[in-house]
Each structure stands twice: as structure tokens, then as C-alpha cells.
Length: 488
Image 1 (cartoon, rainbow, N blue to C red):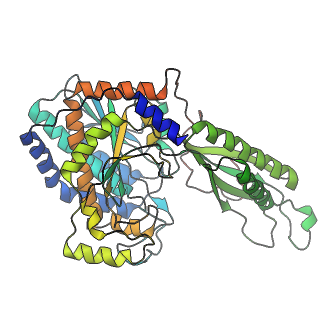
Image 2 (image 1 turned 135 degrees about the horizontal axis):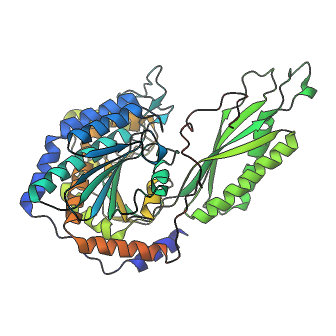
């Protein structure tokens, strides 16, 4: 499926119209504007790093970014798509194209870490920015403010929007925003992500569906009267066995993973409630839907076998990425011009110490290089940016915010995301986003080519339908169900 999708994208791409590079004085002004905001970017990123708010609970992080945009002349609409921590900020300078920049800010549970280059958890802290979304939001805001200044100074018509997008980590926040039609009129969408290399990528991600399975049984004394109990945990364990047997009979590209979020409180009490949290992933969205149906059937069989009952709730679901070659070439040109991240002597020493804990070790100075435009491969992960890519031409980049070789969702990523190395990578991202947006505002031909590529790649019969259906935003997906309490 990966090869077929990439081939379709390549065939769909028209003769690419290249955005004209900005005049040198304008480029210099944008870069200087971002540099002047670098200290604020670092401060904002660190503040959000300290907040470490998980999906749909990012009230302080969202408010901080909204306040900066409001002070910067944007009109901010909070609480869009029935999500309290989502927002859309707009700066309109007359009729013209609409360019969007995405901003994320949710943390991951269970990843608290100091900025030390050795493992050092923060006592009492429940989450950490192991995917660097504190940097993501701060750098995107910085880019937007610089673009606004450039639009005013050069009388550039059009609308610049910043989309505050919560709960990327499993909550599918952007999906609800796409479903609400908030991207229908967007000419191009730009995003970035923290990483350990500087690169623009064109390739699919993995579609996924995630959700929680909740079993209800009967409590009893596990020793005195076990025959009177029906274990909800047994239901989960039988389901897990059935799903693990099923792995042999699905395509090898499919990924299925789970955790038990509630398995009871005491061994001598037969648990009457238990909950598991499942993901199914593949590049092909249709295959994800099919396998998820089989996983749900396994839960029903497990309930039957254990004389319990089960319900399940889809909490998230995203498409695979439909990256845009036309936009990728513009962004790649700008990233190459901006360059990578240069470490100080102190940062090199810090990075060298941290790297000793990594399984994959890459040259420290590779953070200063920009890799060639990357095509192919699915990266193994999923993102709700993908849904946007099926309704608006979309492209993104990664910058070296972490020590080369650092995996996402690790304590090493948390550490770097909270210190100067992470902030420097955010500056590279902000400059690249700002220059790319400026190029696109000045090139209607490029935007038209990007739109034509999207329409051909997704096909004439495509109609967007969210993988998570018509459900309301799962605002409590990061909150495990209390024992014995079932959703209405």
C-alpha cells in the first residue's frame, strides 16, 4: 500500500510551479524578526514544558499562546469544534490566499524528566513533553508573528491563520476541527515537528483507530466465594489472547498494541470493572477499519466466554498522511537556506553525556546539517495532521530539537525539549515556516499546483469521513474510568 500511495502521489503531481524566492531584503527581514523573538520562543516553550498538560487538558498552554497572538494583532476564536483548548487565530490583510500554520501543545503521561542529561524523573509530576509539543506551539506562534509583520510591511494580501490543535497524542484533536469544516477554505497548511534531524519529508504516516474496551462483571471474595464472581479482568485477558492469536492472520504491516488501564484494586476481590486501551495502525485507512472490527469482535467473544459484558468507545482515529510534493519543494528550499542547529561548547558536552544513554548514536554535529528531501517510508507513527492533508494541501518538516539519535516519546526527548538545544531547533522551524508561508503568499501558481496535486492524489470520488465517526470530542480520554463507573 505504501508503494502504491507514493506512486499515486508522484503520478498526480502536475508540472510543478515553483514559488519565486523572496527578494533578499524581505528574507533578511523575516529572519531578523524571528531572531528577535528567539528569547520569547525559548521562554514560552519552557513555560509550556513546565505546564506539561496532557490532551484536552492544556488550558494554561492554550491560553498562553492565544494571549501572545492577541497581543500580536490576531483575532482569536477559542473553543472551536467543541474543544475548550482548541482555537483559531486569524490575521487578515485583504482578499487573497489563506495560509495555515499548526500549533500543538499537549504532553505525554508518564514521561516526567528534568533537563539533566541523565535519567532524573521529577517527583510528583505526571507528564512530560516527550514529543516536544511545547516547542511546536511556541515556534509556530513565532513564525506567525514574523509573517504578520512581513505582510504589513510589504502590503501582502491574504489571510494567515494559526490553528491551536490540542490532543495530538491519541486524542485526534485536529480530526474534529477538519470535521467541523475549519480547513475547507485553506490554500495550504504548514506544520513542523521536533526531532533529531533537519528534514522535509514526503511520505505517508500510518492511519489508526484507538479506543477503550470496558468490561463489567460481578465482584466476590476471590477465596471465600469465587464461584459468585465474574471477573472483568478475565474478560480483558481473554480478549488480549484472542487479539494476539489474530496477529498471525492480518497483513504484516498492521500494528496492534494495548495497555490495561484498570485491572482491579486488590487480588482478593474479583474485579467487577476493567478497562483496556487499544490502537490499530496501518498506512491503509480501510484496512485499519477492518482490523478494528475484528478486535471489537474479539472483545465480544471474550465477554461471552467469561460471562461478563463489554462496551467499547473509539477515542481517536486518523488518516494516513497525503504529503504534497509541490509544497515540499518550496519548504525544502527554505530549510536548506536556513540551515541546521549549531551547538555551543557547553551544549556539545551536555549532548555527549546524554548520547551515552542512547541505543542509536549519530554524530553530534549532524544537528547542524540539513538532510535531502526525504521520500518514502511511513515512519511508523501516526498523526492527526494527516486528516488535514486530505482536505488542504499540507507539508511539514522536522528540525533537530533533540540530540541526534534520540527517539520520540523518550526521557531524552523531554530533557532536550526543555533546554536550549530544543529552543534552537524551534528557531530553525520558525524561520522555515515563515519563509515558506511568505513564498506561498506571493505565488498563486504554486498554490494552484498544490491543490491540483491533492485533488488527483485523493481521487475524484473521495469524500472525507472521519475515522472516529460522528462522536463528540473525547475530552476525557486521558482520564481512566473509575472502577464500577461506566459511561452513559
